[in-house]
Image (tube, rainbow, N blue to C red; front, side, top):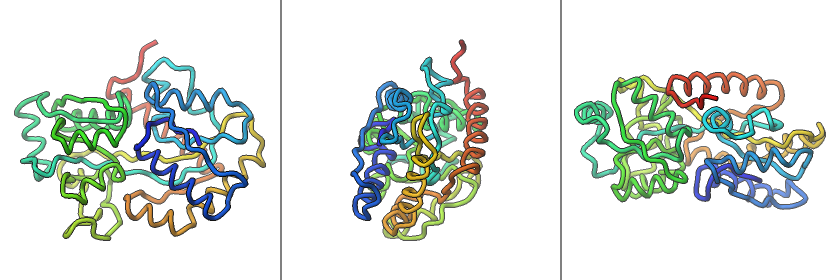
Length: 299
């Protein structure tokens, strides 16, 4: 299983869970070998799969930057250079600050940003990646300016925020849940149209469902990221069907359901024509967002 991201990222954590489920329930004749290839913003992983035409023993676990990299960097790849298998879930984005930060509401945070443009630093997993796109959307919606600092992955971002080397992040829940539990980070809002469903307490008083939507706090920005499985082009229909069946069994396990609960992922399992239609619509949405942010590389 190739990952277009680094070790410790949300994609890496999900891949290792899937790998353990596959072994536990004997869903594959051979175990998965998880291979993070996050070089060049993830391009290394995508190119690896593109160059593996017809190989049924290689799959890729992707996030939304499969749409973004071809538009923001000069790499010989597009999301259509892979065979879709399944979308497993949608990942939320949360606006995080350090628990000792003076900002306890979105209004306070944005007021400070307006007062001193460019002073508040945002950490994110890469340049012109999902995190960067969310931050650019905040800037555009709220009329503010931040100092965006790219890191190798969400794990690094959480560490930097705990250490107060940056002022905020828009990490996925899985990338910051440990630090939230430990009382080191504070969530301000979630970039979804509705609150997250998970009600199990993660701190003494709060669950994922406790976090208000950004929109309800006056910040009109929504964004969710897919978590999807793909194969190289040139594979046979029965080989694709093998992995579709495998992923159906993975998402039916209690381990997977517990993972969604703990890490606040949104259920959205898609295969076949429904998945293909979703990919086309999601790719169009990302093009529009990237164009508004000025991130598209002019050729």
